[in-house]
Image (cartoon, rainbow, N blue to C red; front, side, top):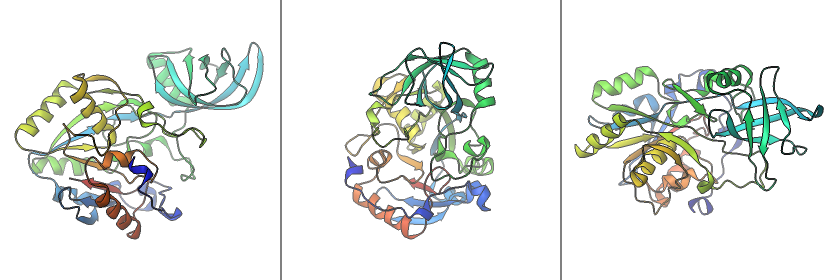
Length: 342
């Protein structure tokens, strides 16, 4: 794995703790590190100038999954007794309209226990495996009623580098429309409608799909992330598939906005299914069939996303560019700066 050999240190001040808008800049004015796939040459600019690197006939594929407030807090009850007053539950993957896999932050839980979040929302633990980080819960509501309850009671997932509880709106892309992502598909966060319109005026095409992101960190380092164990639900409209095929046949480049889009498109190429679940692990030896480039954020040394980037760019060139990003004070994580590889 590339993550085992590509090591670098991110100074603490380069962890983006707040949205760009709260730092006094527009979302589309974050920095952009552009890397040429053929030469490995890097250029440093602003994201709103990304049109300089795209051309007529290129196709941007965006993930329009909408971030949900996936942290719920409630009490753990067994029979009629309260076992724990304050339990945090982090939703991880939706299995159907009322069943979820979730990270339950408690050492006292047992199968059959109830999680009571309010007088109208509760869940039962229906499957528990102490050897795994995620457990299965079933809610007392489903469909729109469950979504409404989650949006009313939940908080967006944030990690230790984000000190303040920013509102859910800061965890959305401007084009997000289909609820389902536990964590923001952050590669598209820097796009504004103004920039998207400007790209279309230039002749760059836009298409959408959905991949609902799951929980990426389980709050305990003993649970090592396994890319092949990360199953996420995706859906690619037929219209999007045709746009991809048309762009490729005309000699245009298909540029995925985010690792989620790469996984969805490349899964479809392998399985011939436009919807389902994917645990595709893209790495340096993976042959990309659908995507020619990627727009993404900056990833930590241990992140499996770096393995995916090595399918677009040789490890040595990627390593060199990342060291440049550190020297140039790029910001990391979902509120940070951006990277184009094309």
